[in-house]
Image (cartoon, rainbow, N blue to C red):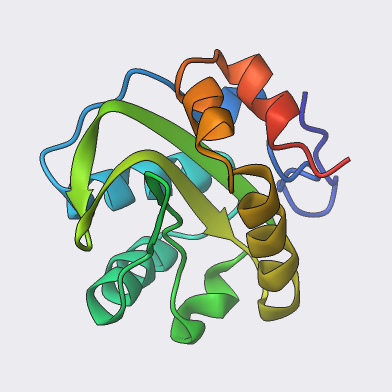
Length: 151
């Protein structure tokens, strides 16, 4: 459960199971980016302008990182649209063509420059093994949250 700051209606938790969706489908990477961006928006992590920044960032340099994983995030110019650090995860069992690869795990990232690096390191460490990638693809939101936990 996310707790909200009384001054700003933003969550204090980086990843919440309700921001994890399984069984997703998208026609292309842009559609998937907009979809995961909407989850970040609805959770209060970002304002709407960040989603266009996510799409632009992926067009400039793919956010596909291998191992069936894409990590769309906004370009530097939209960092002010980040309200709180957070992640949204979408699982695409059939995969989506993405930057020369095929993504099945899409992790939308809303973070400041400083936090971004720590989040990327955590993702890289936890999903460097394809067995763990398979486990995530075949898990439910609560299990995925536990696997990707920053604890």
